[in-house]
Length: 315
Length: 173
Image (cartoon, rainbow over all chains, first blue to last red; front, side):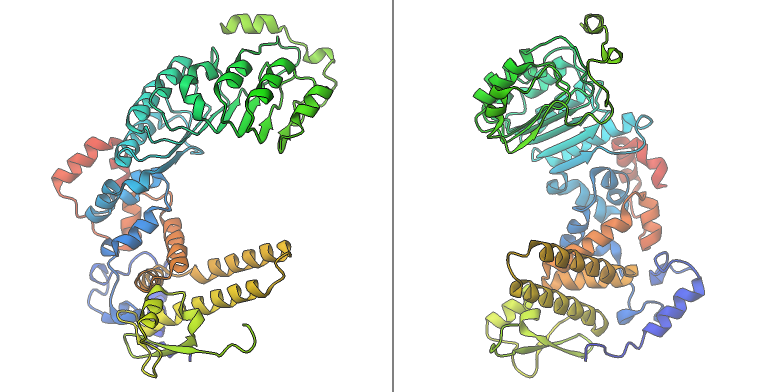
């Protein structure tokens, strides 16, 4: 009963076989260059499918599963109807992920332009933006002035963003809850630049990529976080120079903290006081938990850099 | 299926007159069937006529509904504490879904449109996922060739596209 006779299937299979190619390439009947008038070319129902005219809610569903770059360089430029959908449906641009794209440098200008289009099409409804490398201060400001609804911002290794750029942009992000700055190397204190936007941050990830042993203690960033980010549930400070004092300040002030990652913060020494204060943290990553690439004794001379010289050159 | 529960079947009739009988609970995955039954129709011997959907497509939809109803019923009967088994069953169903939807594109189109008309959210989602997967990383012209869509832009629209996004035009023509 569930398997009725499929009268047309044999014909259809034969047609695929005749072409000897992937069944996908041709079967719009009117456009078939070889057998334009053979009605049995299309199988089920005897009619070819008009992909351009598929129901708009179904097409919306398909577009919703594509990322911004795929719509901007492919599906959104196929035909009038599809372009119209890509242009006029702001919901497609609520979450824009332009990270993890292989052609990193060559298309920087293009990605910059694409990000601006995505922001425009979201028409003030963008909630999440994520990008790698190509974002500049200008672009960040552009997003900030047009997407004040943004809740989540992920910037992965963006060397063209400055502290000043962050400070300017943050003024526009009044609803930001999640901020990730991976592999960043800013000349200054990011949390200070975040300013008032820090008040409602729920998740803050600042990953300085390389923490090292014997770097000078600096708790400025930690104190800023402690005093200005009271709502934090998740904090990731990787490779930061904070000491026990800074971490205690954070634990004492950010009372909602559930997840804490201080990997490669080698100035933090886990003593009894810290251990007891950390007891309430559900997910905890300690300074040496991620030392996959350094497995020798930290007191080993090989890891004792001339750190003062390094920091002098930074400022 | 819980013991003692009366077995209610419904019949779906395709646009080309083929009948498919399935458990009402399985058919209720479709919002359209749900609405029809709610207003007191569709339980008779004449069944529920499904317009615009041929027997070949409807048979696939019925297979999907049966599978998902059976999986959900089995999950209900399982020991709630057995997380591992739940995860394994979910994974199994996902694998079944992936195999089921691994179709040639015209069939995929038919099922997507059918699932959309019938209001079967899970199946719509599955089709959209598969269809999007087919288009990922492809330029507009590659998609046009694959799906047999005509480039119907006017010269003004082309100029606009070139202005908006100069980087893509070389890819699309």
